[in-house]
Image (cartoon, rainbow, N blue to C red; front, side, top):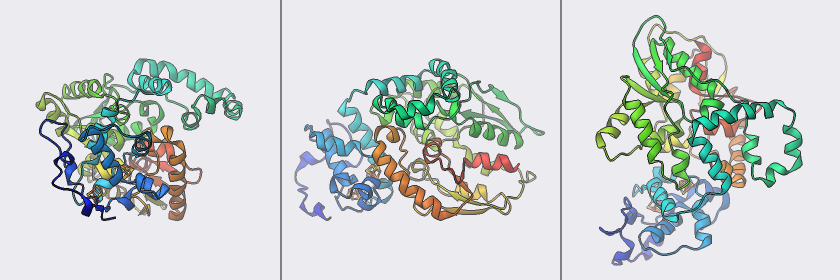
Length: 411
Ligand code: SF4
Ligand code: SF4
């Protein structure tokens, strides 16, 4: 555990150089091991290779020492969920997320043909929209069960993605939704890529809540995917960042709101050569939960609900955006609602962006652990602010809702 004691601090090759790639605080990893037990892959596989500490060593090897890494090291590195739980407990405040992103870029991996196709669909709205009616017909056709049983989906490596499918929304959202009664101002809504089709309920509920609060909502149709999936797969996301910043910065709105914390974590990290552009974008960017809580009108009352809600805290919300209190405060606006948190909120559910598709076995094990905790909470409703997690955690016993959906139901 205390192998930092063996480190040779006189060895300058272990430290970032002024000419080499800059790794924030990389040299500050003391190898103390404080991060080990917080890491979901270590909990799952219980070997040192599956700890943040070992991954940081591999990253150092790649980026600082400019050494080749073995196939095994690469495998253990890529088993990381990018949940960033390790960052929250590290006494040296290692910027693990940034280190990992840089390592992925350095690996220059070529995505599989299937991954390329998926990323292409996420990137190009026009083609995504053309695919949706085909998916809707497939889901209604009666072909699904026989195809699932045939084994072909598994052979084509589509089984996991197919299992997550729900009927998609086919129409586009309107570009403008007027406020009700009073006019308190305008806000813009970031809708994401596939959430536009598969999480329409949350987006529409969010619009209704904002309208009921007196806000006009703009949904700029030119917006694109936030780029998180691309970045987490070691691909550049600059084009998407530039497009979204240009689209939202051109609007005269009070705030730019996101509903999925996975997207929010990426949007909050947008960079640009033009500092003013990214600063202006980030200045108005807010989690919809924060905005609604802060601007909730005193006269707007919610109907009581005699049920129990358990709050799942997505890693992006907890470890990256570091916002663990707002959802509870927001739900407390519903009279009679009993609110509790899930016992193991610090451990990832396994969704991890596209991890549920790229590492289905690990993801399934983490999900099964999460489902035990969900069952133990004995709640009627499970609340989560990240679309990726809700899609993956789907249970037959609880309603799984975004906080906005719950507020909307009680309006
Ligand atoms: S990453 Fe942080 S917590 Fe983990 S071993 Fe290094 S210094 Fe310790
Ligand atoms: S990001 Fe999560 S999975 Fe990856 S090393 Fe850190 S704690 Fe482990």
